[in-house]
Amino acid sequence: MNRRPDGLLNHNILDADKGPQDACGVFGVWAPGEEVAKLAFYGLYALQHRGQESAGIATSDGQRILVYKDMGLVSQVFTESDLATLPGDLAIGHCRYSTTGSSTWVNAQPTLRPTKYGTLALAHNGNLTNTGELAELVQKLEPSVGRERGATTDTEIMTALISLQNEKNVEASAISVLPQLEGAFSLVFMDEHTLYAARDRHGVRPLVLGKLETGWVVASESAALDIVGAAFVREIEPGEFIAIDENGVRSKRWATAEPKGCLFEYVYLARPDTLIAGQGIHATRVAIGVRLAQEAPVEADLVIPVPESGTPAAIGFAKGSGIPFGIGLVKNSYVGRTFIQPSQTIRQLGIRLKLNPLREIIEGKRIVVVDDSIVRGNTQRAIVRMLREAGAREIHVRISSPPVKWPCFYGIDFATRAELIASGLEVEEIRRSIGADSLGYVSLAGLIESTQIAENSLCSACFTGNYPIRIPADMSEGKMRLEITEVHGH
Image (tube, rainbow, N blue to C red; front, side, top):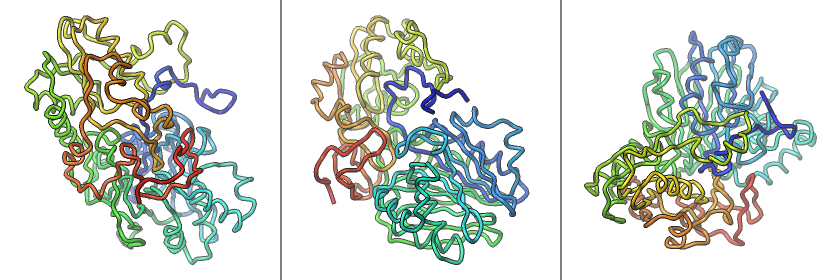
């Protein structure tokens, strides 16, 4: 892999104004007789949207655990021959976007630790909020661990804590550690014989269980079950621990559920073909678009999405408004993370690497552009400028989430609060900043009603600043720092 001297990947120009990024995707499979490394590969492929910086797979043949991981996309990290070197009956996999810890190879997952009862491999989606306290505990248990291993993630700390417990096996050790963890975590982990999964008591990040003909699968999203031919069984509950081996699935409740599912999963993070809390994400996003049309109506000739994340809401807006739906922006599907630095000429083209307008559709028309969110505002500003250059007569921007005003400390990498355009500007000021003729957001109440989930079972901290899980005042999460002296909420 081509890395810069500082160990980071070369990213393309689009990363300079990347949208919200989820921390990770996780996948686990217990399926004797199957090619579990390939199943894990395809599961991660389905979860690639949740993390594009690194990918890894661990497998066990009953005697030892092997891990293969590297920086890059799933398709860049693994070849057919790589997967052939990972035999076994069970596997876990991970694709990462860094929030806690830098984007370097040592922080790629799964993590691996020897224990007195075998080997432990672990992968994590989410973000812990008491990492500092846990790191101090690890240092007391094993003073050399932090300095020698070099990793900087909450995942490494969890792995160390479980491995250092004085219990009879991994299962007992995990059950003793889970109540000490605060924040958001959906975990898949394994020893040589058993696949494990656990979810934090708030269920902030999704985690589901699926059934294969010859075994079981756990994954961040149900779409990953579909791609490997597993039937959806159920969500793993908040505060639940499960173990899977030759005796089937065992479940334990390690904490009382206090659901606070991430509202932004419904807006943007999850794939549209995923189910969360029994709701199809595509249908939910269409419903949000219908509600947006009711709340922020406009006279126009055409509704177009910012593909692909804005497409379902744009379909809903067209349905709710009676304005025809059309495709006005074409996305280059193969633009992702790249190891090639763009030339200055290409850099100046900016977002045209990713999106290009269809002049024959746009010219002379009043356009409604539907997108899922505005973070810094640079992308919307560039889109409005492109559409005007393509001859749009009016440009009305509609957003299928409320203004994002607060950073996330539970596993999404937004910008810092100072960089979030809505944290310092009112809607009219944002409209002027991006150059649109009008700007409208769906209301928080409208968004929540569209999910059909009770408001008190959702986390909406990025919109409201009401953080349902305690945040230390000095907490740092990668580029994000809490910029308030008290935690709003409970």
